[in-house]
Image 1 (cartoon, rainbow, N blue to C red):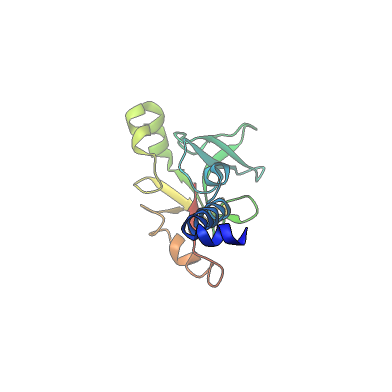
Image 2 (cartoon, one colour):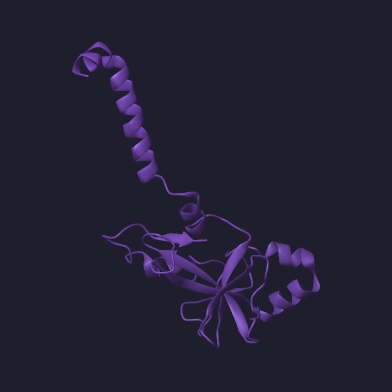
Length: 162
């Protein structure tokens, strides 16, 4: 065996490198399931039932507030994490809903609904507890990033979980 390895040292080196790279890739790269459950974009969003305190997923194109499955007011919740975006590590960063006038316009005109798809824009209300609301044109103006800028110090980088 020793003689064969010495006579074929280039092949043995290449085979060893291939095995090492394969093992590292298998160990370090997230699986498709982990990637999907972390911060990948999808057509679903998280929402919060303000009466029950429960989080649930629904279509991304819903304009909050709307009626939750339990019949209560539901608002969008944007989760943050300092690590993985799983249930154990994420936390509610802020809650989002639309002012009454904006919501009425969206309900009356699908074109308005399509323009309300993000976290930034006029007619949006932000909250850190789901109860007290701040009118702002975006999360930065509402103080979201200032509030959490040191949350992940020493443990990771703050990221939005989608």
